[in-house]
Image (cartoon, rainbow, N blue to C red):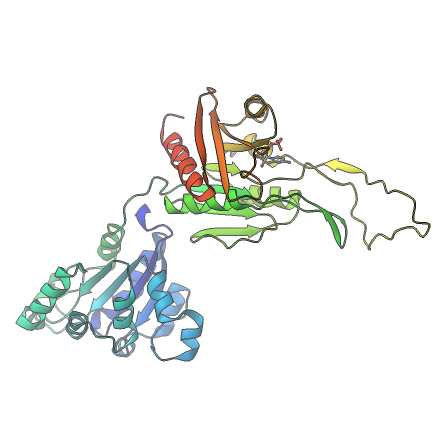
Amino acid sequence: MQRLVNKQVVLGVSGGIAAYKSAELVRRLRDAGAEVRVVMTQAAREFITPLTLQALSGHPVHGDLLDPAAEAAMGHIELARWADLVLIAPTTADLMARLAQGRGDDLLTTLVLATDAPVAIAPAMNQAMWRDPATQANLATLQERGVRVFGPAAGEQACGDVGPGRMLEPVDLATRAAECFELGLLTGRHLLINAGPTREAIDPVRYISNHSSGKMGFALAAAAAELDARVTLVAGPVNLPTPPRVTRIDVVSARDMLEACLAALPADLFIAAAAVADYRPEQCATSKLKKSPDGNDGMLLRMVRNPDILATLASHPQRPWCVGFAAETDNLLDYARDKLVRKNLDLIIANDVSLPGIGFNSDQNAVTLIDRDLNQTSLPQTSKQKLARQIMTQLAARLAGPN
Ligand code: C5P
């Protein structure tokens, strides 16, 4: 069921007696790692209360197409885009008919029209209704359009009939939902990435920092999530949006960053993309420092070493596979190899920050990967997004390999 980890499932519930099983389905999907938002038809509310499904999914249930408050929170188009899968369980004969007609007369049908995600239905109805030629024609139409159909099972029905039309059990539906997703290269892996600069306070209004934009680390986090990893991104102060499916923890100083990284363990892989300040002022003044009135004096700031986050994690009992960055202006590969050994890393990513147009604060980069056997792989200049995907594919292969 690893395929459901981090997946965003819209669970549609329509008005049939099997709706009581939707409660367990929400639990099964969440247990498998999916995030679930529930959309109920009006009739579904006659069978199970929104409150039950809200409590189990951890989110308010969506119901009305024209409710301004709900639309402001997460509108129907947003919800349609959010979904990686729209699973409708139970799907009544009436809903099948409305879906086959392409109607948009309530939130659920509108959402199905608006989504690009796969749509799966779990029909549940009386056996005679299921066998009815109208239902069978609707089924054929929906299947032709690529809607996946889970079940129905045959057996004893709530009305006393025996035959096809029972909704599949929640555990089977969760398995079928998982099968809608491919296994990614990093499915089931937890990746910890830090990014951006750190700020080291001098007094309440001043700090020492650097020019790191965080772009490379954020691009790596996005690429890892695309490959299906669970990603924790510990970010210094940057002005970047959080990539989809990434858990972001904002920090300020190097010591905060270390603490957040340690708290995120265990992880399979740690990528230290942050430009951590090596030194911090020994003391942070409690009130704003004043200049002296004579105007000609200097100022001495005593600095002390910050912890090395990467070296700390590389020698931790729960040591992840450790990847560092070496941003250098000269002797790039020599310094990078030296850092790989000194910090006990599995791989180092060397980039030459003296070249114009790449590295710090720029949108492009070019890097060389050096592993423990000192094998080198050069990835030529391209956007940080493309490069991040290339790096992540390389790292995923190494994680899967004999290393
Ligand atoms: O020693 P140097 O700063 O050049 O090493 C760079 C690598 O070490 C980067 O991956 C950086 O994130 C990491 N580092 C760290 N903690 C520090 C300094 C650097 O994790 N205090």
